Amino acid sequence: MGELTDKIKGNVNEAVGKVKQAMAGDANDPNRTRKDDQLEAEGAGQELKGKAQQFVGKVKGALGDDI
Image 1 (cartoon, rainbow, N blue to C red):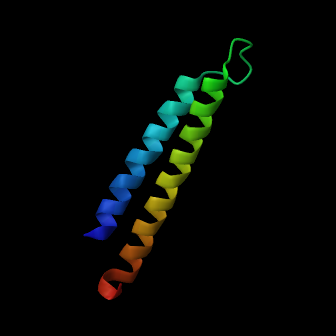
Image 2 (cartoon, rainbow, N blue to C red):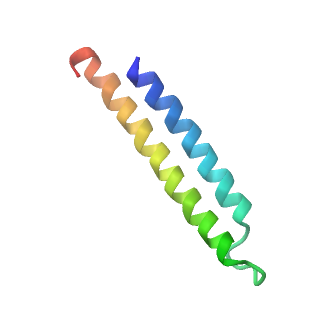
């Protein structure tokens, strides 16, 4: 059951991270603010966290009930 939970949480975090990055806007925009930079960095971190959670879910799936 942990495998599925990790994969779902990973997908959600990855999606939310992508949305945050999109909300931050274009990095080349001259009107970009520090808050935009922070939001983009937060989104990138959350997306990476999601990918890691998905990987953990795959590992758990491969190991089965051994963990």
